[in-house]
Length: 186
Figure (cartoon, rainbow, N blue to C red):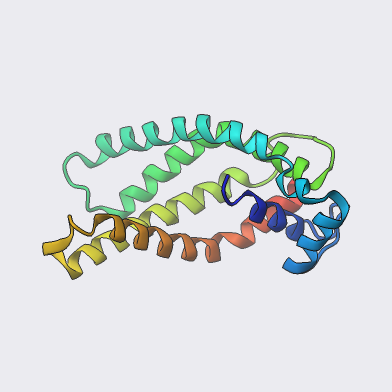
């Protein structure tokens, strides 16, 4: 929710042509939202996002952990397995997330609501989370190997660095699919 205003601007930028808003750049999108709706326009749909976050994550993490225990047993060093667990967990949580994401985007764009499962949300999120967790696990292992003596002392730094690196790389991979999803949901 902390990044919601950025998501609103991104959604407006991605809605080129197929929605009523025709914006090309970040600055133009931000100005257009402020001009047409004021600062509150940056937060249209935040309630839907707030309602989605709890239930979707409440489903995601237990499914992920159950899959991890069932398939990994005692060997956590299988990056491909983490990818599969993420896909299972993402598909389960997206049953909740997808319709609420549709509502959120429609509120952000000020358009009517139609089919709540339209778009590529599940595919994009499954790909996003699978790549993210696999990269995050690999980055964690790599960073811990650099300084194994201090791995426990530097755990927060290692997790934050691995998460940021994985998140940035995942954004590069999934942004084209996110663009398609927004166009379809419009």
